[in-house]
Image 1 (cartoon, rainbow, N blue to C red):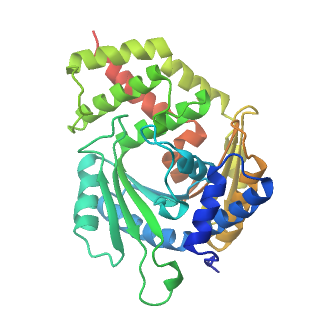
Image 2 (image 1 turned 45 degrees about the horizontal axis):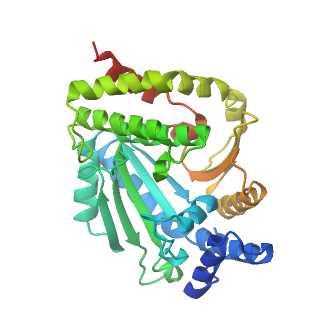
Length: 357
C-alpha cells in the first residue's frame, strides 16, 4: 500500500498544536490545524506497523495466548493532552513532542511474562531503532493505580523508509489482570462522563480503582501504590464497602446489557481478511457501528476516522477509535471497553469481595 508521507515540518506542527490548544481559535485556523494534525497522525502508520509486527512476534514466542493490538491516538485525546495542566501550571506541551500518537500493546498471561518481554527482548534486545524512554509502572505503579510497562522508540531506518525517521511509537506490555483494570477504568469514564484515567474523576470512583489496583497487585505479588497503609484484610473490606456504595457490579452489568446490540448480525457483516476496525460508539442511541478494512485499505480507514471525528467534534455522547487487530475476537478482548464486556473484571472483583467475612 502507499503509506502517507510527511507534508509539514516541526514548526508547522507546533503552530497547529497552539491553534488547537486555544479554544478561541477561528474555525478557519482550526480547520487548517486539523489538516496538519491528521497528516501528522497518519504518517505514524508505517512505523506503527513495524513495531506492531515485532511486538506480536515476540509476545507469541513468550505466550501463545497473547493478544496484540495497535491504535492511532484520537484527535480529541491529542487536543486534550495539549491542553492538560500539570500541577496547576499552564500547558507547555508542543504537538511535535507528543510521544504516544501511535501505540501498540501486548496483553500477556502474567507479570512474569510481561517483564520477560520488557527486559530480555526490549531493554536488552538489539532493535535498531532508538529507545528514548521507558517506564516500569508495575514496579512503580502510578498514584491512580495504573500498572503496565512502557517503552518509547524513535523509528530509524538507514535505507528505504527514511521519511519516517524520528517518528515515535509507544510499546505497552501488560498482564491480563492489569488490562482488565485499565479497561474497566475507561468504561466507567465513558459511561459516567469522568476522566479517572487523567486524574480528573469523582473521588469515590478514583479511590475505588486505587484500592482494586492494590488488590490486583497483591494477587500478582507486585508492589502496591506507594503510601498505601491498609493491610490486606482492611483493603478487601474497603473495596467491598465502596463497591456497594457505588453499585459497581450492578452498573457494569447494566451497561453490558444495554449494549447487546453488538451481536451476531454485526459480526456477520465483517467478512474476509481484515486488519483494521473503525469503531463508532453512540452511547445515547445504544449503537456500536463497526467498519472493517483490509491492510491495503489502511489509508481509507485513516481518512474515514478523521471524517468521523470531524462529524462528532465536541460531542461527549460519541466515541470514535481506529484500532488494528487480527480478528473480531482479538478486538473484543483487547478493547472490551468499546464492547462493554466487563464480565472478567466483575469476576475478579467478586473474588475479592468473597474474601471479606
